[in-house]
Image (cartoon, protein in one colour):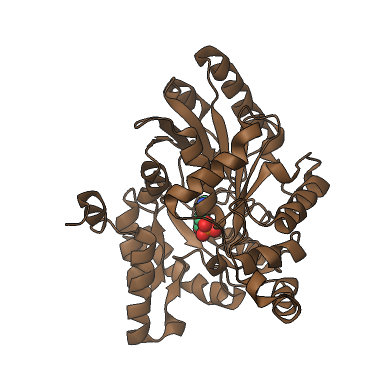
Length: 397
Ligand SMILES: Cc1ncc(COP(=O)(O)O)c(C=O)c1O
């Protein structure tokens, strides 16, 4: 007999996947070019040349037994070194090899960071709406309880009033995601500074650490002129969970890392602890070939410019049509207000126009919808009349 908890979860699939699957079926009927699917956050640009070239070179140059063998649980030193050098150069940090643990993308990195801080069943991890729906699985799977602070819908920055009321001694970490999926909003320096101040004070009051776990798969997807503060510089007890999925357009390759500050309370044994957590969750080590590729091009990014082009078009045109949107500072997502209070009903209506959008309910922030504009600009331009038709429908109903 299978575990009921997991069997029960099969009844509550992801709203994003459901819309994506609908799109595939609909395409068989009306043709793929007539379905405007903005549901899935799958990067739409190729990996940087350096990444592909490195893989080819590694396969030609290196001993295949070593290339395809297990790496140490902490990751390959060449990869860890290349990453910390890149971070130190770009952000003025002081990371060394012992700060970093290679992981299977952001999801794998979060699995380690969360398990490290959750001490007992029911310990709380606070996050801020709107948030990535998988956080529920990540946190409950690690034995914790996810608590979401309601959104500040005016700015989509942190709702500090609600946050401060929800803090309590059971809180072990605050899980943030900036640039944010689903809103595209980047937390300001003011927001991060205030977050750090509140947590410093609460750590003293409760007599134990409260970590910031900063989930940063979109760190490199920041639009021109936007200030994106490096969270770890503001607060000692910070762990960053990073993934190359979006910056290098390689989500299927499953490569990322956790990096912990030297000033963090648990730094001296952090990486060794992550290695022990790995054993229990069957993580063991991320793919060696991917680690070797990262070692050769740690700082490379794909040409991400199409996302900013798409954002500019959609923000300008949808605003003109009457949609209420906080302009994204990064990512490839946008989070407009739905044109009726029930976002699910709104997205069902948009579906009638073959416009596939994700209602915001599963992001913990009802009344909005997410557009994932990781696609060609041509598709964005062809979709504009569809958005216009939906807006017209709501004006005239
Ligand atoms: C906010 C956020 N966190 C974590 C992840 C998981 O990233 P990965 O697939 O690289 O593990 C995603 C993926 O879309 C995401 O959007």
